[in-house]
Amino acid sequence: MLTSPYRPWQLLVLSAKTDSELKTATVKLADYLRQHRDLNLADVAHTLQREQKAFKHRQTVVCRDIEDALVAFEDSKRVLTNIQETEKRPIAFMFPGLGTHYVNMAWELYQVEAIFQKQVDYCCEFLKPRLAQDLRDVLYPDRFSQTQEQQLVQENSQKYSQAGIGLDLRKMVGRSERQTDTKILSATSLLNQTHLAQPAIFVIEYALAQLLISWGIRPQSMIGYSIGEYVAATLAGVLSLDEGLTLIAARAQMIDKLPGGAMLAVPFSETEIPPILNDNLSLSAVNGPSMCVIAGRIDAIEALEQQLTRKGLACRRLETSHAFHSHMMEAVSSNLRELVKGFNLQAPEIPYISNITGTWITAAEATNPDYWVKHLCQPVLFAPGIQELWKHKYPILLEIGPGQTLGSFAFQCIENNPAVSQIILPSLRYSYDKKPDLAFLLKTLGRLWLAGFQIDWSQFNAHECRHLIPLPKSL
Picture: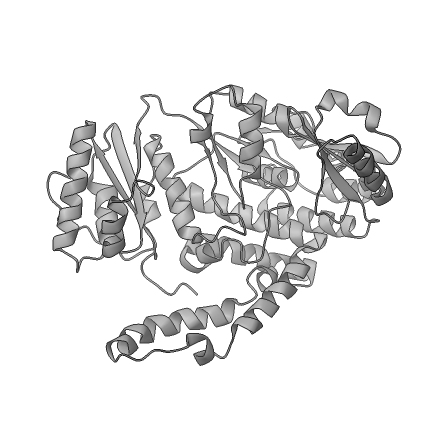
């Protein structure tokens, strides 16, 4: 399905011993590009990544082609700079749960990144008989016609442009905006169903993690939120990939058959929650110093929401079908326990934080089927978990999944550090953010490099037809 030997976006990296030398190098590179507009920017990026020495003063730019690069160099919002810290920081992966998923998550990565596509394809093929559905049809409902359009653009755009002919490419491939919107609405309705949403989140996050690992971005520690812990456990080797996929699919199907429930985000600390709870309401998550989630029966949540609103307290209903991480999950406990008993659970090879305890998971916990039953029914202790993770060498926090929800939670939990916002990074855009997926991810990759993280550039470019080219010696 990959249709181009080059990524549509490139990451240019520059470094120098001093700030003035970096500015000089930027000017020289811009002049060089201005004089050699026929160069392939992918080869320029490749040469800068591979041939430059990495000095303390660093700069990155994400751009599409030579002309865009020249524009970007003049835009302070697009040029990112940093003075690299002397001590290399570890990196921690954060895996979100439900809530920010959407149709066409990481669609551009699926089109242009071979490793990401391979992982998604394997997972979706494995899940087909378990879901009676190809998740790719739900995640990327228009993928076949979009691929046709992309190929059509590549084959014909230059020819017709030279002839001065304008074309409606959508009509050429037999689809319209209305057809596309209808498909996306239908797929969104499907994707919001629990039995598909949970496996979809797992697949995208696992594939994205493997892509980043292939680029040399390996986590020294991890934390997952709800379903995200299953991704962390799979990457850590507690579950094999096939076991992780089997478990997440079966778990989602079990939950889907339970009575519906509701969840409410409330502005309380964990210690303020107990007086609110009753037989119909459970603490579902601790997301921050004064951010918790309560889950339970729909009527009970509605009553609580009205009660808090009358008191002038800001609370928010979550878009959810069930009361996750509450007593309402207990009905499927025995079935889930029996399923996990059949797995060959192993001690984690990468340390990660437990949702249940809010601290590092132990080998005894990870390999006990009862742990995974508790994980289903007990609250997600994200706030104490991220605080514990932060104590471990103050890592760069990289959110592996759509949006920046965990990043915002983490910032509020460790905001006493003034530099913390610089090392909490996203990887995939929110649904409403219209930035291209690849450009979004490359910007984060650049920020990791700016922070001193060593990227494996040879692997980053391994699936592309790139060449080293002569650049000015001063670069």
